[in-house]
Amino acid sequence: GQQVMQIPQYQHVQEGEDFTTYCNSSTTLSNIQWYKQRPGGHPVFLIQLVKSGEVKKQKRLTFQFGEAKKNSSLHITATQTTDVGTYFCAGSEGLQDMRFGAGTRLTVKP
Amino acid sequence: DADVTQTPRNRITKTGKRIMLECSQTKGHDRMYWYRQDPGLGLRLIYYSFDVKDINKGEISDGYSVSRQAQAKFSLSLESAIPNQTALYFCATSDFWTPKEQFFGPGTRLTVL
Image (cartoon, rainbow over all chains, first blue to last red; front, side, top):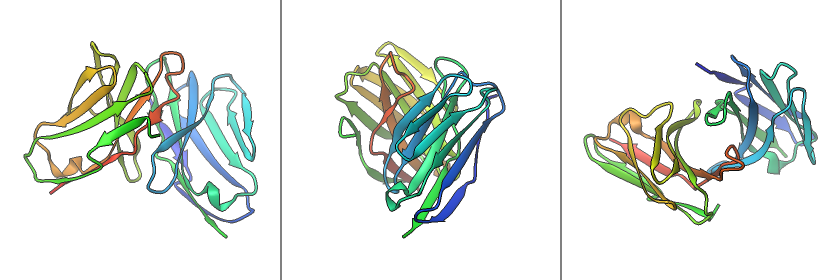
């Protein structure tokens, strides 16, 4: 069945450094979503990518969907303490399913 | 989101007990979901419902059942709780047009002793 792998599991950065998390699927995806979960909180939707090679930006966050639609990445430029949390990707092969990766937990040292 | 509420927020129970977790939403969404979160495993889908008459099993439905009492209410039951069902449980909703943009409740932390 569909597997969504996310790396790294943990990332600790100094404030101001960049951060990237990667998501890889064992199968071709129709779309991919990214969510953020603050410590003690609930997942919050960030973005959906649908097209092969798509790149979307939200302020300091850049999201990419691979050309083969089997991988994706989230890059944060110049991290801030407000970026702390766990970032999840969730891949879909069809209309109904959505399989979450295990998440990358980001900590930021001021 | 305050639009999706879950009760209780925390629950400690014993092995073999029946437990019900409840979810209510005021977003007017048709679609509702139950997930469990375990450390290092992300979120796994237990059940989902696209409307009151539609219930579907997710990735890990064994040991769980659900009831969609109304468009706004979706409850999850553990008929006979076991320790490996100790987890953080989230309810989520989405609408028909953007089904992958899901809105999560605050979560219920369940401990089965």
